[in-house]
Image (cartoon, rainbow, N blue to C red; front, side):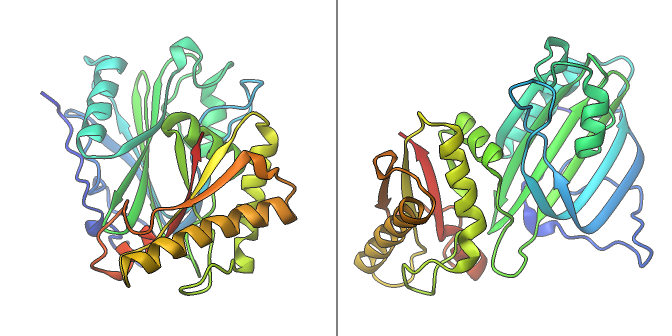
Length: 303
């Protein structure tokens, strides 16, 4: 029986902290700790940047992963002495899956899967994770999507302690933070596709906004770094309006991305195909603005 409860209801997030910015020593509502764990430290930043660890570069030493922005909660627990790293980690992993989250990355440092060197200092510096020992510990990064909101959960189970970091991604200006090229590629490797945050169009048009430049740059870098990768560029819309209109709009938007990458970013057209599916594959309910915003997206699918 699992000893952990994960509540995949993101509407209960965004809890208040006191005026000094200090949080009470209470668990995060999204993740309850393994039975017998004791919360030693908690730090909450209402808006901060968080480097989400998703492995290393080709050298095996330099950490990579997306830079997320939002409400960041860091929790540091003791691990029950009579429970193994594997038992505690498998409980968290199972609970994450049962809660409907997508596991983006996982590694076992005992096999040097996380870092091909001492992992402790690397994860401390990159993500502020302290539970990982140099040669022992297990890690996972998961993504929760619920009601138009997104949260990422990073968990490290070490020999003595457990880290749980929760990043509740918040919108700034026109959208979510864009993933960098390395992170886009890592998600494609795991899932076969990746949602590219940060591509914006004029309302009800296929005209790309200038604020899309950062995301387009990262797509171009991804395809440059991986010369054998070919992709379908897939446009999605919400369900407002007629199906025929949305289907055409999504087609045109996907093709606009292809054209922009080919014309101004030097990507070969032969490596990209633009297609649109309109409202046929929603990520969230179309009944509210948050869900509709989440459904309007561009996705890269590996061919």
